[in-house]
Length: 236
Ligand code: TMP
Ligand code: ASP
Image 1 (cartoon, rainbow, N blue to C red):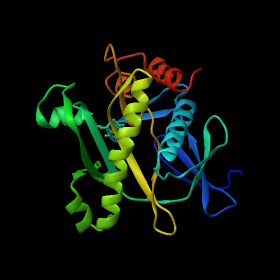
Image 2: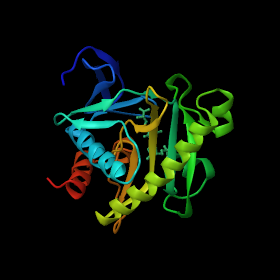
Image 3: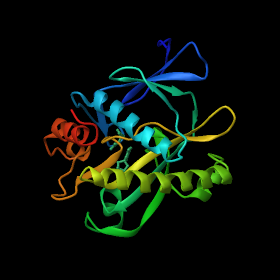
Image 4: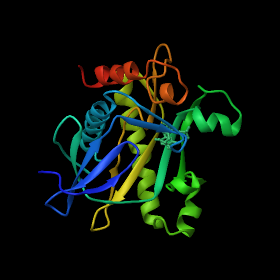
């Protein structure tokens, strides 16, 4: 399967059409942004790592009954996926307080919750991805009630599968962001990526940050952290 015209360029990925209208190719870049694009940089080798990690985790989820857009890894940076219409909701699951949760509620990072939390943001860069609840999503017709129920159920299931798998590799899954898409028949599937760009990963022993927070907060060792996650999950 070969790339045809570029359909879309996002902050971290490009999407290309293929000869098959039901499929497209996602190509992962090394570009990194934070704070709605205000902070920009490059994380060398990130595209390769995020492509391979996302595909490994998507495979794991499919083996555990979660439908995804994944079809086939084509190269270091390129993956064939089913073409979907993205539901304009970012779903965030949290197991431990961090980031905007800690800031919003005035608590420290690292509080382990008894139960995971879920929140939605409206995927809209001009508005800065505002937080919303499911009633707001319904009012704006971003998704149907049935779709929102499916998205919630898949998101909690994904959390259970990923949390257990990552722990086996010495990684604590603090929180993460998911995006879902609709296939032409309306089926909801997991789309986008699952990577150190979109998850918070902490070393289970030292709680060292192994994710994009090293870039967001200028902590240094960004490339090393991405490589370490890759090494632990996939090997070298
Ligand atoms: P937050 O604490 O900043 O709300 O982030 C929660 C999780 O979502 C964290 O793992 C990083 C991820 N995330 C994205 O993938 N994209 C985004 O635009 C933001 C703000 C967060
Ligand atoms: N990538 C997002 C942006 O540039 C934010 C983030 O991951 O922190 O807006």
